[in-house]
Length: 372
Image (tube, rainbow, N blue to C red; front, top):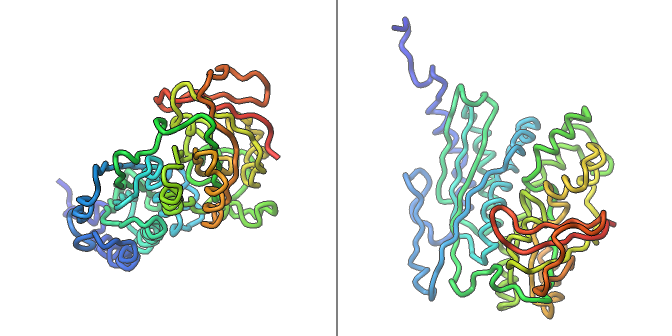
């Protein structure tokens, strides 16, 4: 038997700090709401009034869950915690939009070594800001203190969201047609994928996150913590405006542009993509600093394209204008052919071929040319 009584606090869990964190985050959460939300912060479950779905013909629920990977290590190293939450929202809700669904509500989970109320509140403020940008309600969450499993300054976060779409309006391979145009929607930077590669490159170079990088116009850490762009509202507006003209969408996350586009193409289809855009400086920096092979770079990072849209060729110009008006740089990068499949192997040094990805027996994507 121990000589001294063991309390929860002496075991490393501070319940009062958790309560303080909840108080600090209340205002942020209050801003990330929708009229359908019932109840408030602190309930055992978040509640969302689903009666609005009764007006739909055949509502289909869509759900997604994700985290932000090792980008949290940079937030911790920089002691900047109010942007990483937006990354979480972007990674979750924009996967839902790929199906054409409108994200409705989201929950989050934060695990930490020690609850520092101000830090937790900063993280949640970023989540709430992301939910505002996405038109999503933040209906609940959990903060868990894990002493002994995580160091006091360590944390990780994850989230899940639910959306809805009419069954006959679901986007995907079944809508793609020969001659469709592939549009690229600019990313805001690295987003939330490939940070294990980025961190390894930075470590090998002996650089610090506080290093000023002239070609970036700011410190390396500030560039790497640039929040993930959230595309859901502009894309939902585009889907409505084109009234059937958007055939498929793809969120460019882990695996890169080619692999994620292949997932939303029908088997036998080939999309030929041209490297016709100028790489943002951060991608060139990672490539040159780490002498990273192009194939590795393209399979890991988004290369400046955060989303792709496969649209009716006759509506491609209008789609580009609408997205540009929404302050998302957009340009045409390729077309889709549902004819004879292209060869399964590259036929030239600057050609990359990807067929299917992540267990999906999808189409083929051929990436050609060189970045400008």
